[in-house]
Structure formats: C-alpha cells, structure tokens
Length: 169
Image 1: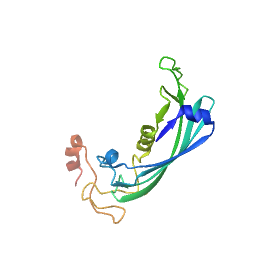
Image 2: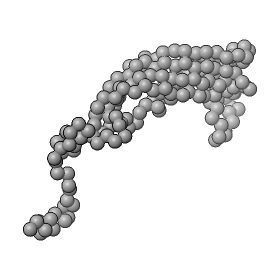
Image 3: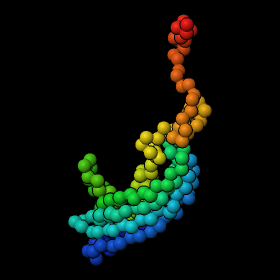
Image 4: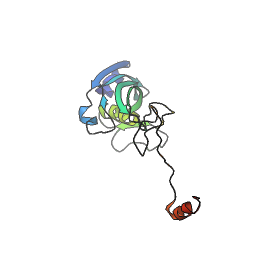
C-alpha cells in the first residue's frame, strides 16, 4: 500500500486506497487471540498544503477469551486511521513536540507499517463478556456467571492464624 507524495501533489486531488492484509504471520504467536479475520483498510489520501493527509477506517473481526471467565467473544473492530506525511530533506526535519506529522525523505511512503501499528494498538487489552462478569472461582474453577459455588474463599493472614483458633469456641 504505497502513496507517492510527488504524484499526488501534481494531481492535487484525492486518491482512494483499499487493501486487505493477511495477519497470520503477525498475529500467529499471540496466545490472547483465538482467531482473526484479514484486516481491511479503506483509506483516502489527500494532498494539502505540502503534506499528504491519509485517513479512513480499518476493520477486522477478532475472537478473544473473556479475561475473567474465558468465554469466547467475537468482536468487530472499526479502527480509525489518521496520519499526515510530509516530504523533507534528510537534514531539514523540524523538531516540534506538538506536530504529529511524519516526515519522510522518499517520494513513496509504504503505509503498511503504519496500518499494522494502528491495528496492533487497537486490539482489546482486557476483553470482557460483560461488565458484571463474575469470572471463575479460584478454588474449584466453576464459572460463577452460570452457577454459584460454595467454596470458602476467606483467607486468613498467616501472622494471625493462631488467633483464629482462639476464637473458635
């Protein structure tokens, strides 16, 4: 997925970019993902005032386990993409902390690394099947959303365990 800054500046119009990325090599080692569809990028590149503004949406489906009860969840992700690229000579790059422009030295910019970075940063960090998910019992492993368990989960501080025997009567 390449954009040519020089050609886009000559045309002075908008270029539509669509591509589908296979993520098997990128997400294959992740154990927190049970499955993922290909990433679909639908972007628009516009040349304006010396820079190329690329914006659009990245979409994909992922299957992840709930962080509390391990139930499989299917989530449809719509990830906004918004980057600005400007061509500069190697020694003329401006240092401005508030500037979000990405300065490049070549006429052609490969958008794939930026698209994949946005996708990776947008993956669910702590997915939940429900905000009120009770999770699994740490003693017997029962899913507490489906049925309550009678396990005693009261823990006594080992430094005070001797006092617990004193108050049993």
